[in-house]
Length: 303
Ligand SMILES: [Zn+2]
Image (tube, rainbow, N blue to C red; front, side, top):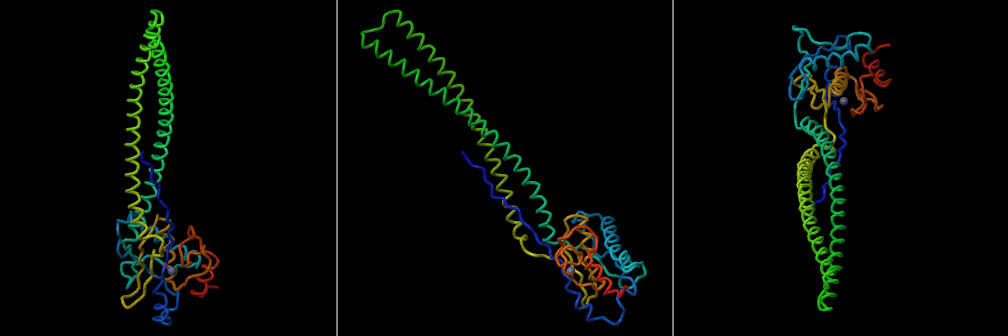
């Protein structure tokens, strides 16, 4: 009988928020416009529906991410651009292998749960089969013993030159009973075999699912386990822009947007891992840490 394959591993992904344009930005225009003197005006660059986020959800996430800084600054430092704004900061959703891998990871988690449930069911049925087969084997052993006892009696009476009518009748009755038992056991054997066939099919199916799942895990693993950029604020010869490459959900998107807006304001990474401006996106929610707030005060010269 086949065994059930369980070679699935869960993979921890560490997400990298990069701000590679920050240094360029500081070098390029440190004296042209004092930081936070006029609001950064963003606009939606490219919107990609493959992220599974509607355009209105994206717009709302941008508003929420901007308001984190506006609220703390006590004034508008980031806002949606007007139609006549010159060179607004485009914020784009850039779909890539990274997001594909994230989606695949979500599917794998769901399918793994399904697989585990199915495996538990198959294991239960297999245990029940083992009990059925044991019962059958016990009956078979009892039948074999009864046959041996009958044959011994027959041999005995044959050695005596034949059984008297009374003994002969007893032996005949015993033989008939054994024949009934044999037929019943054979019918039961058919049932046990059919049961075994069903379990083998179920196990083969389960192994097929495991194989497919493991192939997906393999694909996913190619993209997992390494740092990757979830978003980026870029300022180069082509201008400024924010690109978002990966999100698990809306809350995650808002956090990445708040982080990249922070870079756009001129804020660098801070140390506390809970911070919006920490290098890795490992915190939760949109609340600014003391380090985030201090960095905003310094950059925007707030007192
Ligand atoms: Zn960053």
